[in-house]
Image: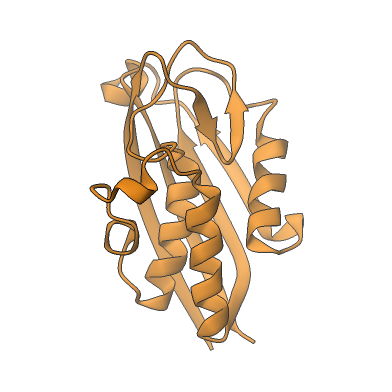
Length: 158
């Protein structure tokens, strides 16, 4: 048996925050706003798994008004989602992640993001794909207001 899950998320860029994408800190003058570390990439990874399980969303499991998640590393959300998948008898078959970002360029960081996601999901790197695209300087992403990400995951029964 297979299950597909999808997620999309957006976070605005703000000063005085680290930019963390896919568990990797990327040098940039701004970071993403959020209750946790605001890692939009790991948020969609975790939430796509929850979606495939029919288990709701990140807000259901890790509410942003709960102080225990303040500043939380998004690694935690992915690990908890994988734990739920294992408990339900599923493992990740593969995942495809798209990052919508104008700046900074992720070209040199994508291999590290891919490796980090594979490690968190406990799968081989060949089962993880990470892509990035600009919005050609249009809209809130293209104008540098924020960064979005999207993920599609396929889970398979063990």
